[in-house]
Amino acid sequence: MTSPAADPTAPATVPIPPPAPGPRRITGAVWVALGIVYVVWGSTYLGIRIAVETMPPFLSAGTRFVTAGLILAGIIAWRQGPAALRVTPRELASTVVVGLLLILGGNGLVVLAETSIPSGLAALLIAVVPAWVVILKAAYGARPTLGGVGGVLLGLAGLAVLTLPGLSGDVKIGGVLLVLAGTLCWAVGSFSSSRVPMPGNPFTASAYEMVAGGLAGLCVGLVRGEQHGLDLAGISTRSWVALAYLIVFGSLIAFTAYAWLLQAAPISLVATYAYVNPVVAVALGALVLNEALTWPIVLGGAIVVGGVCLIVSTERRG
Image (cartoon, rainbow, N blue to C red; front, side, top):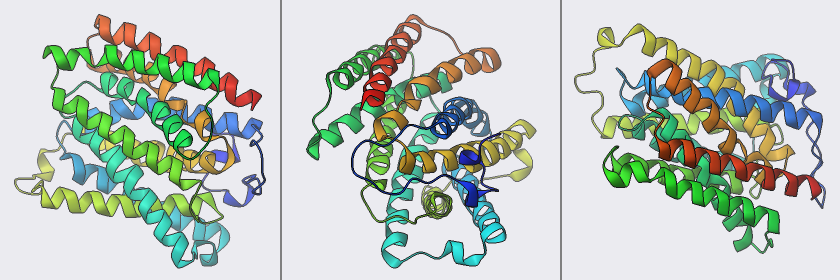
């Protein structure tokens, strides 16, 4: 990890651009943070799949984010002082809502889905996120560009191909639908975070979001009865290792980088991680878990990855 844009131990050095009208400037720090989100989040689908082999979905996801959020809050207080964690009531309310959308809805539903569908397929289905973002922007009066529309159409075409395993019965359609619901929650949370009062320090916002979403995940897990019959001794070593990886890399590093990107880069550019993550996820799923590379996954994946070029080039011109 070489960039302060994704280093939670050095929040004071993060180049947070001041609010300004017009397009946001895409800096080198943005590309570094985006690269971290691309690669690390691509690997988290494998981590989630391994964790839920012997861990309950919502309790494991809730534990992941509460732990990561508290650690991040401690680092912020240590590096910048407790005052850095102070937020207004409106800012706190905003971070809680965004955290519920991103962590409980977006991540939680994907974790639940991965108990029944392959990690690579789950990652590929996330490709619908940029489509939701463009639709949300259009609903708020932003006219989509031709390149953006083209990228979304490619993504949706690939998504249609990727749903074939569920429709044919090769995988559980319920898992597919859970991921799609999660993408809508994630898109709404990402879109809203740049339009509601948030803490000026994106790392502070990230900490509150993770704790809020994680606590909600624990509550959902308890309501679902995931604690019944839970035997900690029965959890495999690889599931514990996967959970630790998700806490440190998936949450502390990548989610924090993502939270910074939401304030520092165009939202449609940030959303392009959804096209790159699947490439990493599918490769790791095939190599580590021997997940099958069927023709819908290969073809659909190729189509959705192609859409990123149109969206990225459009944002750079903007």
